[in-house]
Length: 262
Image (cartoon, rainbow, N blue to C red):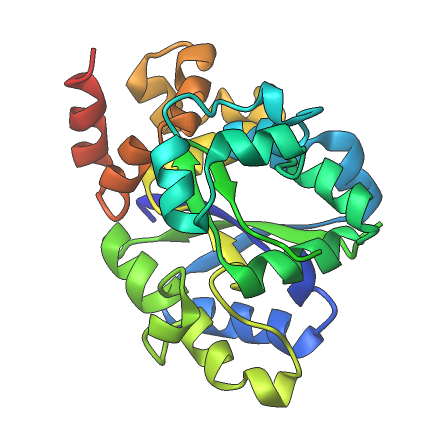
């Protein structure tokens, strides 16, 4: 099979065997080969820092000690348009907090904070930096490797489904489970969208770099094809515009686009 993606069942879905089984069944029916299944516990997630590496800037901002450590320069206009208050006033009041500091202040668990975040929505102020207005050891994940011959765009849209499950195709994983969310008694929305799957060859490589050992991902054919050093590639995970522009493109197109940036 010519394409390889990396994915995992997200923590909020790990408590439902029906959901995990449905994901595997839909991949199989679509001709996507699933291999390398590995259960990663909540404790292993915390020790390994996998999400921190995968999400780069977002993770750093979430764990920043205070708002002064956030890249807020030039964000004043967007902040005031979204929340109706001057950013300087909010900073002076000490009510703008990074995620971990907000969680501690509000006395919320990580899951409770995520639920609050999902209900209120968020505004993007900078790459990897999103702000929401809140009034006030997890289950782990199941990781896997995916291999398929269909175009990446079909894999993203027809098999995995739109990031916002309400707009996903009914036959996709996210669409299928969204339509059954009441029977599953599970929140399924843009933030809790059940499954992660790399959306392009570059994202797949960056995901493997975040979740696997160097001894494994350095053998990756696409890593060798790009001929870039690991640090330069890792820096691309913070370039949200670039990643968005490459989603759904096949390997040749992604390699050409990256070559054009050098």
